[in-house]
Image (cartoon, rainbow, N blue to C red; front, side, top):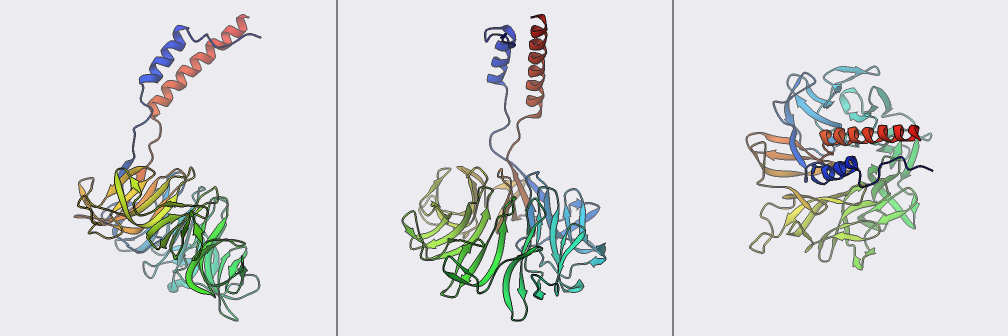
Length: 404
């Protein structure tokens, strides 16, 4: 059997190895840009205001961002960087989608489908792109429903949308999809009786988790349909959980992140371990408190929190002063982006599986804006260069094989 590639000492392979050792493979760090701000024009519409409400933007694994903004003359609309989705009187599945205010949610999946809701102007209605999925009064599992524009949707890559509703007769809070009920008040999961399920999260494969108080506690726990994952009284990594303060995300490995309170401060917890907490060191900075945290597909933590300053006391700016990813500091209050100083981070942010981040910040001379922090791709030129070399090697190998 003949070896088709040249031996390692051949001139062509030596050139390849030399170039590989010196040619850049993509810049270190992250690229930080202002994705959307007042005055920007998207899809022919000029942004007037970015809201500080939560769940008004999300990012998929292809880098598409869906967001809600107020535009000149037309009020609140849903857009991506590539298309106008809803609002401003657009007729979607027979319904005029004119939003009454900014209190609506939006989520985009890897197919580019956007789930969003609208409020009382047209009856509380949930859409997936140009189709109505659900309206107040529709039946789910044979029960009537009421739906609020504040019950934000999340969607997986297959188009399954999870959201919260109130089931009627009797009034019962529930986490549902367009296909049925996931969990509701009165359900018993791992011995805990649900009281008020809300805030569903979903990963790309359709696994759903949610927050809920229970009949024996007004503190929140994190559940799936058949398991309690994190809650008060749990001991994780030897540290007792006093309260779940905020649920982050559910990554594709089924790991849920949550910000929890303990006797010694706020920690990032998963169902298996306390990951970070007060005193943790990231990029040479000591963590003082944690506001929100998410986990990427490869296990890196992205978090928003505050640090202990050089004089040994906490930040004066409160919780939301530093944005970290893994062992890197991405941004901090006081940093400049495109010449504008970051004055404040708003609490809600979103990531995709590889760790691209969209976060809302108040910028000097701009106001509220959406920032995008992207993980760098390998250099396109580098990829083309190595592709050409590999094709050349392949061609030589084929000719060598034919000569044999």
